[in-house]
Image 1 (cartoon, rainbow, N blue to C red):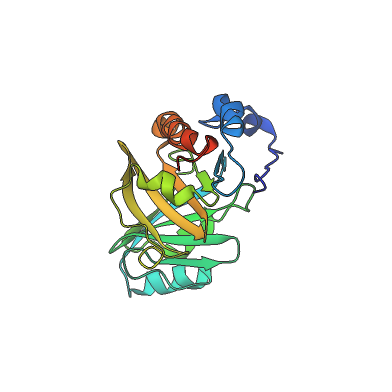
Image 2 (image 1 turned 135 degrees about the horizontal axis):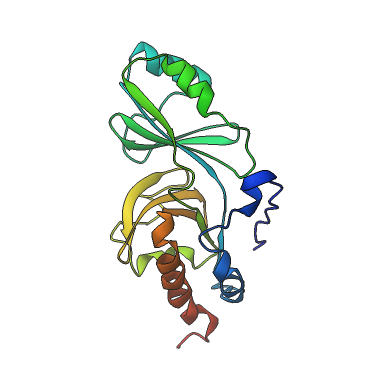
Length: 209
């Protein structure tokens, strides 16, 4: 399980930024478990996130969809990938657009597409961080504290929902068979990371026959 690597090439004030989990980077790496019950956790820092609200089916929504290159998701759990960006459904008229670290800014484009009609486009990148959990035991770790049914027949790759993991509210996004991205508020990221490290620990020990 290769850990994603990100290089911060920001300049100016952005070069001074620190991710919510920078202080736990070593502990996250040390928590990695390999083998048949392998699981690893890492932060996906500085992702671009834009909160989007607009009336579905409106002219403004149509322009925004053209800007995003995909139709806005229409129901709970649905996501809409388009190039490096993915739009997650949060509510009947609310979405979160997520792009990887270093992605070109696109908030101004969405503002222009809204064209003053009712709705909002807000950069909320500092509001959340992204924690990636991956490996054969990833779902087992989540099952310890998530009330959702995460069986593959119910929660399939590409789906994203708002839920809780332990006491922490998160957006849970399954991006691949054994890969999940969790989007907690930045102020809750430390608690979530420590919860995951603790929940992963048993998989480093021999299985009990």
